[in-house]
Length: 113
Image (cartoon, rainbow, N blue to C red):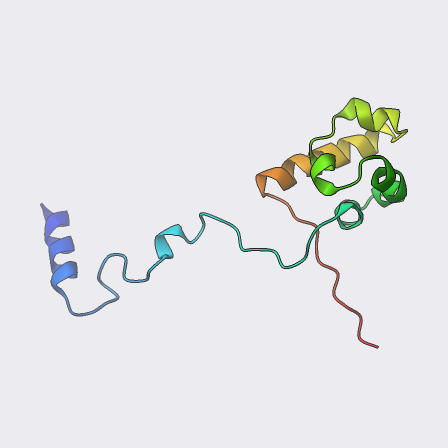
C-alpha cells in the first residue's frame, strides 16, 4: 500500500527527477558496451594479450588470416602451428573473453612528435 502511494505521488509530481524513467535510456545503461573506434586485427589482439604471445603475429597472420578465424580456432590448429601450450592457453582464453565482450585490447595512444 505504501509503495503505491509513493509511486502515485512520484508520477503526479512535477519534478522530473522523481518520475520513473525520467532519463531515456537509463534503464539500459549497462546492457551493451560502447562501440569501439579501433578495428582489432591479429597484431592488436596478440599485442593486447602480451606475455610473449606477440611473437607469433607473423605466423598467425599467414596461416589464419583474420581475427574472426582466430576467434574460432581450436587448440589443435594452434598446436600444429608450433605455438607453445602457455601461449595457446592465453590466446584461447582471451579469444573467449573477446567473443563475449568481456575483454578488448587496449588502444595504444599515438605518440606526439
